[in-house]
Amino acid sequence: MSLRPYCGIDFGTSNSAVSVGRGDQVQLVPVEGDAVTLPSALFFNTEEDHLSFGRKAIAEYLDGYEGRLMRALKSVLGSHLIGETTQVGTKRKNFREIIGLYIAHVKQAAERHAGEPIEDVVLGRPVHFVDDDEEANQRAENELRGIAEAQGFKTIRFEYEPLAAARDYASRLSARETVLVVDIGGGTSDFSVLSLSPDHSDILANTGVHIGGTDFDRLLSMDTAMVDMGWKSKLKSGLDMPGLTYHQLSTWHLINFLYTQKVMHSVRELHHLAERRDLTQRLIKVLEDRMGHAIASRIEAAKIALSSDAVTHIDYGDIDAGWVSDVRRETLITATAREVARVVATALLCVEKAGLKPDAIHTLFMTGGSTAMPGFEAAMQAAFPAASINYGDRFSSVASGLGLAARAAFKT
Ligand SMILES: Nc1ncnc2c1ncn2[C@@H]1O[C@H](COP(=O)(O)OP(=O)(O)OP(=O)(O)O)[C@@H](O)[C@H]1O
Ligand SMILES: [Mg+2]
Image (cartoon, rainbow, N blue to C red):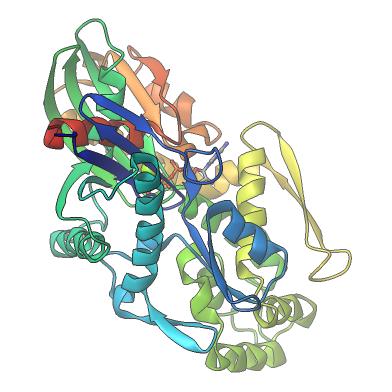
């Protein structure tokens, strides 16, 4: 009898990846060309009537094809938005269907590799999909389970993403260590404390908080691009400019909700009342041309550039001739300082929950793209002075570990 394949899927806010195994052998598999990671993006290309995923989806949107880009869909799980629909061409689609299309695409990549259908999966999940609301948190997991079932998975297990990363780390370990796993992603920051040895692991505590790279993008955007579009300016009456539209425009998973007649109408009204119509004119142009994701992409790229450069340059000349913005690392650090401090506090809380003092941690095993935020490593080192820092693959450690979890659960 041939061995049944199984898989582990990391459905990330920003990037996804999948490991496929059979018997003892388990590996990350290509999901877009040769790449083993796939941006968590779909583009409903209504101009050419097709659906694209990943890098291709983002490229088609940025190339100016008519259609609808969807990103950060994981942030919708557990929120009231999951039941909402969004306009795609002439149809409306709900978020369960849209996330289902994405999971189906990842499943197909796994099955292409396996050469047959796969029914058994371990899905990663953050410790908290939703902060401070256990019911919504459980609802989010149930929604993801339902979506995976609808795509044909039969046996579905969940594992906390940082525990999956710990399996990846443990697979390379030679001695016993007390490890704090630090996974700072696009949507959430997740932590686990484990006592790990090559053949044994004890989970001591898990914590998580709904702060990640998409929040850092939002905060940087609010302090730069949105100010350049009128946020923080005044109305002619002397009142402050209302912030809701700016807030939505800088939040990845809310951008599409702005593209309605109702929003256009109220923004045109505000423009009429604004003191700085030169700035609100840009907002109107961005909404009319549906450039919300283009702005967010430029902000994200600037944030990433600032992890290595002290200053970076964003060109918005396609929206308003001559509009350019120099963004300094200090601006990013100031904009995000409070949230980064909350992330570090959540790490300390995890260690406290484990009944340990910070200096009992031997290793910080760091994964997730947002661990590269300026100042983050230094802040973690200051909080855990006795620990040495070890990086896993920032974008695939969790998926590798979910493959190991699937092997433990499903190996035949
Ligand atoms: N050099 C960098 N500096 C700062 N942030 C970065 C850098 N590189 C990537 N990021 C950010 O990392 C995030 C993506 O990380 P990752 O792929 O680990 O998230 P994810 O697994 O999709 O999200 P989650 O686990 O929270 O659901 C994005 O917000 C991205 O902008
Ligand atoms: Mg992740």
